[in-house]
Length: 187
Ligand SMILES: [Zn+2]
Image (cartoon, rainbow, N blue to C red; front, side, top):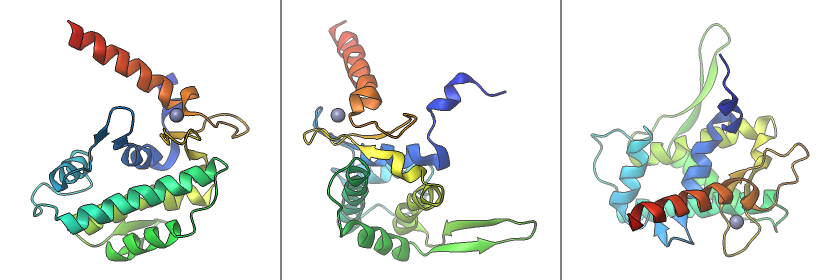
């Protein structure tokens, strides 16, 4: 049965990509990718990285941060901002390092998968929703808030793709979560 809540989920698992971009919360001064351990934890919690792989290194952490900011750059462009010309190249490097490849099977099955294990594969796996949503145009609905001090990523569900401010989508929730959190701490 389809519940009403299903409409809040972005297609092609784009929520995963949006969550990745939002690992940096400028308002709360929280950056889940500030340490390599934090990056490893984030990827493992989402099933992108096996628990048994070796710890993430600093160079890989910097690659992850570069990927995050390239994705944000593209989402800012989706929101009417200037194009980030380097961003596509960053994504292509990540795809190549993670051996993102097309896999074919019988019965009409074809899918992308990152063949590289470890962190490089985990980062490349984040690009599968981007690729798939780019095929049907829903990738353009993944936007970063136009407020420059915010740049919070959200999925624009408005009928004519006119959503500009995250207050209408995620920021509103974020504010709600924050006030909830504050109430909890006060207790
Ligand atoms: Zn915002």
